[in-house]
Image 1 (cartoon, rainbow, N blue to C red):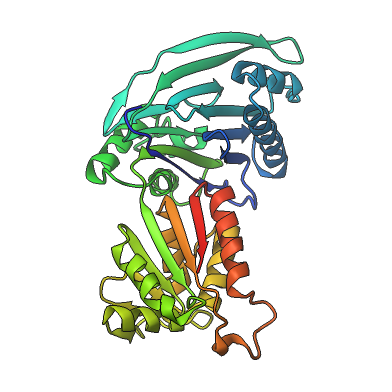
Image 2: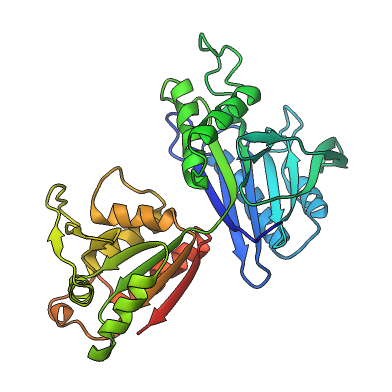
Length: 391
């Protein structure tokens, strides 16, 4: 790999129509000590609760084995011999795709019965050699694994998905046999040609939404897409809370002003300090009022200005649930900025804010606790690189 890029991991998933849970499971983890990234997509046979349990079991086992450096082929073999077998079809109850990405850019992938992954360099599809390995499941039936090993560069993407994606639209006039893997790749090339810097999460969402459209907006099967995007890191700075010492106001303003990347202010007092120190004006945007989230404000040179405690608490709730509402409130905007960024720095003031001393709602945590919780979910669930500095 030429220069170490950030590894942007994203996915999107839709359950089969009239099913409350999806039978697909996507898991990922960044091992900070080794700077490795691992990801797993498993598709449980059928749909509903049973499929969900089996795909979750498969993905959880796979992730644990890979994180602990079990050989990726051996891990796949152990999983195959552990999974229950369908009596009628005599096949395993779950399929899987396993990815292990080393810090120097070497990628290993194992595929079992999922549609083939796609490696893209820009909008060009790159062919990858695959080695076939035959193992036997617990019924001693031969199963075929496909093993890939290759190096990636900045700008590359790996796209992998369950068969609900390429089989979407089956039986429809234009796609009687389903959308098909070739058409999926054509669509990928078109999207990336139009949006060359699209994030992993948004690209996965584009593909799943297209599959949903193919099915007439009622998914014919559980549909999940994962994307790994090797990109130059997108940086974000969030300043929240006034610094402990009044004389540090100009220091925090200088750090904010010199930062290269997106900039966000959370908290009215913090915004007033920065506006004063940077000689900027603030105006409240009252166009999109929300009953639970205070409106955001506008300051020249700042990407987003929000209220503090309430907005950040709501943002943590959105991030933990993994479901960002279709809204334009300040917490949604903050969530989108966080998810579209790779390296996130929090500058957290330690001065007590008099405005929050009395009658703080029981379900609202104080600023420092909220930042810690937000940092944790961003690191563990969304694989972001997070730095927290207290001032």
